[in-house]
Image (cartoon, rainbow, N blue to C red; front, side, top):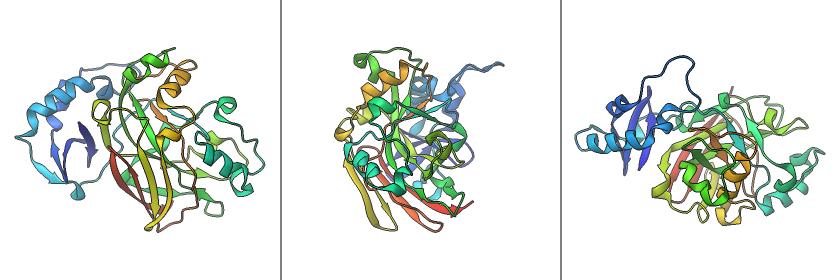
Length: 285
């Protein structure tokens, strides 16, 4: 199933080039009271929402996907956990280019570990990227984004994929510089998720997905998740050994080689097989 959050927090079931407005399916969500429990309410109740959405779909209005504004498929991610230099060729690329590493120590993911991005940086494809600090370089990084579906703490690799609700395309935008990654990658709009959430069962194995990125029609990044140094299950296991993961938390799995600068006026097209394609416009903040 492909679920979209669109326009003014409408819920849609993606059906080819259309989206069926199944917003009434949200009525199955439980009422919550302060203090609100951790996690995204929709993702925590995804099975119930999907069941209701299926029942409503045939009688729901169908809108062209091109006519709606696609928001982040996760409205309230508690945290965004990101994997640095998780493709070998990207590791070599960064180590070999001073404009990328800025004299920072570049370790393999086994030594560097993970880092956090601010949830306030998350937007959807239609929201676009608003570049800050135009005197500095900001780069695109396409990634497979993993959406956690249930509470997970110290899960084993064998259990890890059972904790995944679904997947989407992620853009991890970064300002180049000497500061810590979490600072340079947490700018507002610098985490783009979309175009919608594809449930784990529909994607199947996340370990053989083609991913790529073009800017203004120029192909820049092209790889496959089979080249991840730490695969998705290992990343979930690793992250949950440090943090409690909650429904709606997002795990960014790393980017392949080919990162490059983006500028106001650019259009990014990012694609991952079995998920889809999203187009994102870049502007000055």
